[in-house]
Length: 234
Image (cartoon, rainbow, N blue to C red; front, side):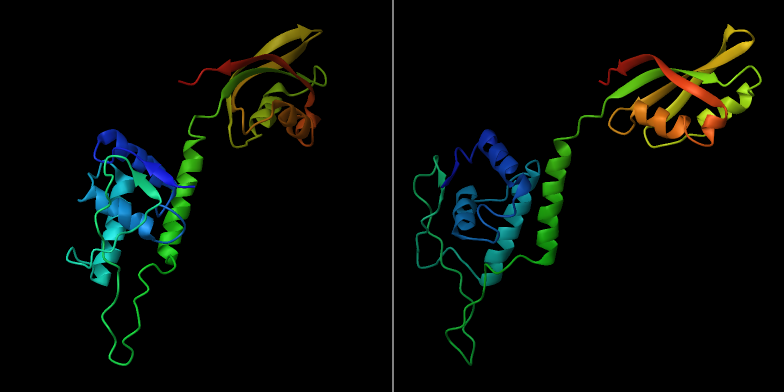
């Protein structure tokens, strides 16, 4: 299916080409082709650095053409390009790229459109990764959680109990303020705040696999979620 570009002489046209080249090294396929030469000829000159992907692509194609000795005084070979540009119905003639004849073999041609180098492949992979990352650019949600942590009895060392709670560390977890609240019969419970990144921390897992497992369960009898509030991220 043909690739269609319109108004490449306008800002909107260049912006669309810039977005198209964000995840691509060439106009079509995985190596330079006549499609690249056709679009290159339409642009006439290097685009502004504002269009970073177009500028990178243009510089690469320009280097390939210069390497092969392509000039404007060519034979006028027309290229049937799959990239249709509406503002330029006639594609300017571009000469076929050929290397100077070798003394031992006059028929040898330079492989202008050879396979991508490792550097070019790596750059393409990095751009694809950047696109994938940009789709997840929005910051992960956060939540504020208030926990009730209950001791086994009135003889439990509450200072040590809090130390055990705060000793639990993991990515995306931040312990906050705390206080002791009387329950009755001389027993107090620990109320403690924590902030979590939702994608990284599961409160249920935190309680079941960390706070109610050794060594924490020597001091902690049970944990309950008192409040669970989402934090708006702007």
